[in-house]
Image (cartoon, rainbow, N blue to C red; front, side):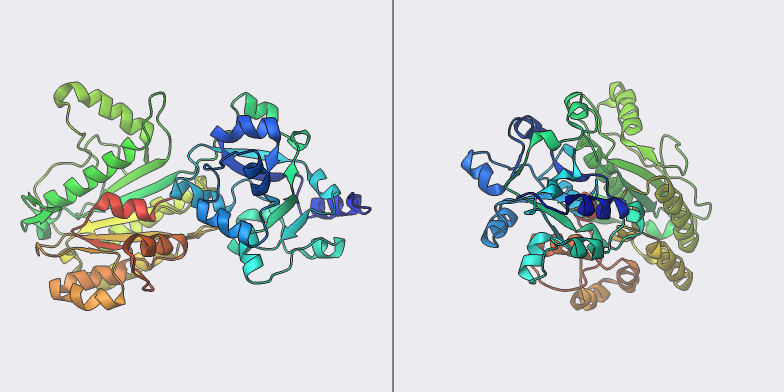
Amino acid sequence: MKRYDAEDVLQALRDKGVDRLYHITDRENWASIKKYGLLSLDLLKEKEIDPKKSCGDRISRARMKKKGLGDLVHLSFFDAPVCLDQALQAGTITNPVVLEISLDVFRDDDTVISPTDALDAKTQNVPFLSTLDGIRSLDIDVRKAAEQRDDLLLSEVLVKGFVPTSLFLNAEELDRGEGLSTEKKQAIVFILDQTDSMSENLSLQGRFQASAAHAARTAVNDAINGLLDSCISSDDVSESYEFAMLSLSEDIGAAWAPGWGESFVDCKSLYREMIRRLPRDGRKTEWVVEKEPQGKAEPAEAFRRSASLVQDWMFHHQDCPPPLVVFVSNGKSLRESLQGARKEAGILKSIVSMYGSVCLLCFMLSSDRSAFFEFPTNRDRGALENLSPESAFLFDLASVLSGKAAESVRETNGRRDDEFRAMGVNGNLLQLIRALGR
């Protein structure tokens, strides 16, 4: 049925800065969508189309059908909704497409608005909005999207049955290959301890290391190479990550072997450097300056310097999640300046964007060969203190995981504890970073 007050509804939405709606899917689905339109789960099943690359996984799709949402198409007020980050992290979408939809979907009286995620709204008995007064009361203004709370970013428009291709606004651009990627960069700052406190020998992942400084260098090199490998395809290098690297010595400065300084370096620059070095030895590229552990540490200054880097990066990448700061150390360098380090680390973590606070990951290198902790909780703190007092320092400095990162850790390790810390001991640094990244 057509709405008798459709023009008033459309004007109410325009008053809130809404001039179109969005649907996020994978590029792989574009040919099918262009042929049939955007279909509900029920219609997808009827046409025997498997929506395996979408914002939802099989479990969430089954839950939606169980809650009576199987005959609805989900649209967003935003071109980068929260579900996109979740889908990219889960791998259910690898090459995102942003499909722009006309507001004319509201000319049908079956189209409604969920004030929050539709599945959550059904579970919590939150009513959908369908009347003109209800739509006018919706607390949302897309012109101020960067200032909105996360719960508003979860609002959804629900269209009955399907959205016809006649309401697609950017089909020609998608056919030309434009607007096919909304990939958000993840910035990572490494703070690398190579001071004289890192001279002890230890093993990392079962391999003997000449010193903790060497183990730190190995862990960071392996992590960067692993992330870079994930960005290289047969025809391109994606821009998924940018890296910066600081040393913890008295002169701070950069720890990059190629001499990139303290600025961020993108994946394409890393790839070019990797290719430049391949003829020489054919091994994995060493990104960290190779040197003997020496000098004293200035952890407070390193955290302060990284906070400045992070703030500048976020200013120029306001649509991206906050950077991840990775502090790699055995913790002993904190002994003389713990109070200052805590203060500056706290300031660093408090830098926020619409996606949340900066995450400080502390990767501890322990001489105890039996030590292996990933994302410890308060219950594990006693065991950490048995390793060394430094491990407790690092535990307190590390960020408390929240949201999807915490839930991902719970699903991975099977523990239902609260307040996991962004910390690892003698573990796999690449694994830890991937669990916390975008």
